Image (tube, rainbow, N blue to C red):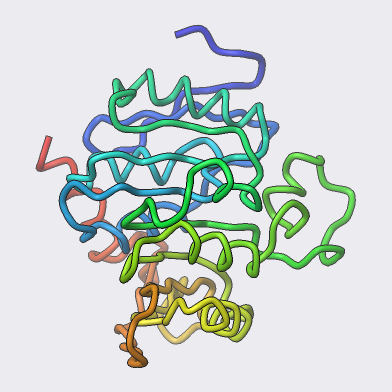
Length: 249
């Protein structure tokens, strides 16, 4: 497959999957890998939507981690959409994974209401006009709530999910109150929370949340996920995320 300038093909080290990325654009991190694993128990034949799919990393992984029927990725940046589409072809997943180049805010207008069993999202973490302001525009959009914010995510998710549909999101712990507030305002009840730490006894760097549309009010807090051992290598749990996929090839 012919690559454009600054593009590369990365081996995801999971069941032979590969991903096209551009070194000058926003590249995926461990948060996307963790979210795909957090959502791996979605039911068979589910219709799934990925809000802010980027290069398609979460959708690509879910195609192999689950028995979903279809996943649609929404992405506002055309260049990212193009890379995601070529990645889908590279992995021969075009029968399951589709990309649509629209704004998340308008997703329900394009896709209809109550059409999906599951929604996943790794949205921009930072509020608009915070942090570095001189980043490349495409990277700034990926990191900051410029084109959509948490309320947009919650509103559209409620509209698009079927009753009792599942919402999975990864975000920063400092935004947890915002997440819970927005979700409850749109009847997405948080059901499972898991904190992610770089190392044991360090403060959390990520939070994983599962919510249910019109779900009952009961929150389960899972044990923390620790990424690294003291020697800098991945913990056994993180290694298992990759090794299980290799054994299933």
